[in-house]
Amino acid sequence: MAEVIWSKKANRKRIAFLTYGEKEFGRKTAAKMNERIESYVQALAGNPYMGIVESLLQGRKQTYRSLVVHKLVKLVYFVDETANRIQIYDVWDTRREPRTQADNMNNI
Image 1 (cartoon, rainbow, N blue to C red):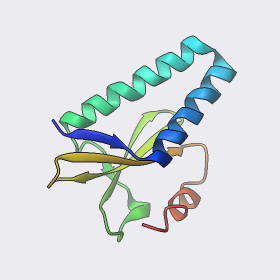
Image 2: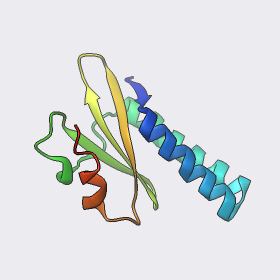
Image 3: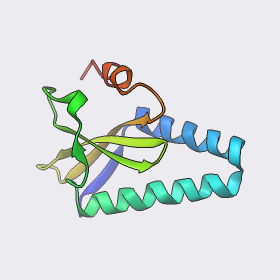
């Protein structure tokens, strides 16, 4: 099993998403959202290549993959084989323009 690490940016976005979910739909729904995200993260730890190569991020230093974990949330990550680690680099809101979100990752 690979270790899964959240970047500070990704973790902030995850918390913001869950806070939004709690505010709009209630604590119980937000807890279910979090459980769903965590179940996908656990699956990812056992199968790091289950996400697709993110076409909007091709040609970057890392090979970024993405995995839709909720109809509103996509995790963007890369696999560090030498460290047996998965780095969740960003969390994308699927309701927003994907090109804009990819462009916001231009410093990588």
